[in-house]
Length: 173
Image (cartoon, rainbow, N blue to C red; front, side):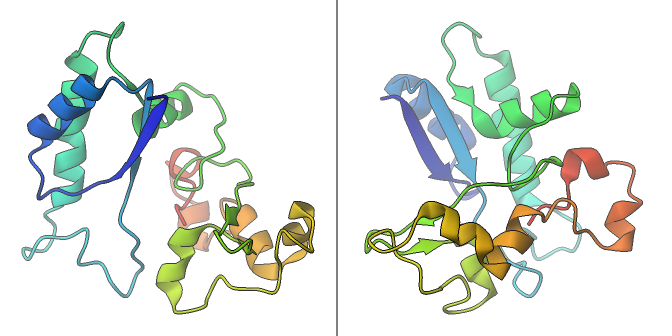
């Protein structure tokens, strides 16, 4: 398999999951965080304020990956992009970094939309009238929501603009 995508789930034992990944031997693996927004943070926080079960799980996975044989371990894009970014390389990733994001979502019905994690903002939030059967992909670039998404790492509030890790974090979504 060339690559796998999986959603981070701290309910799954991280060692068992990593063993499965190494058994399947994908060349690349990407991790997705569950869709959420500022009004619904249950995914990321434990019942005790300040504890981050997702962050803890990701640290455990990173340690397993880092200590595995670099010749045989899969490239975990989530980690590789963070490392590249820390080393000063610009990366195009909607979750972090400072580069313009230029990814679109092509739905099975042909609809062209901004990336699907933004659907957590509300039902129909990412919908528009564009369809691959009658539009060019470039037409999406004229949509206001796509422009905000694409320039999101530059359109930050004052707190994010003045943050010491702005170039690494990019403000996320």
